Image 1 (cartoon, rainbow, N blue to C red):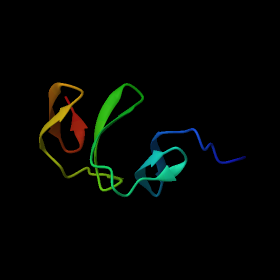
Image 2: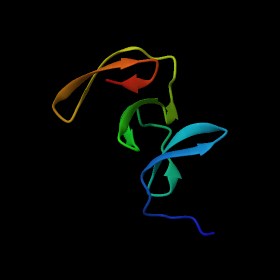
Image 3: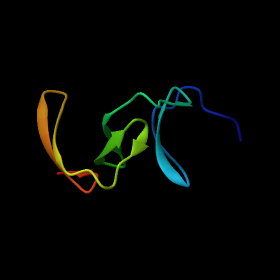
Length: 69
């Protein structure tokens, strides 16, 4: 396999990481769509402990344990 330098999204490698154009983006905090569900990412890592409100693309989501509703 080869690294997909065009890929942006979540990638599992022991933990879920936010990848932007093939590289983990340690600066990203926000929502990420994966398989039809939005997840909350904090500093490049999916944050399963986060619960609260998040604004994304002009909409406010309620996040419960890392999953946006």
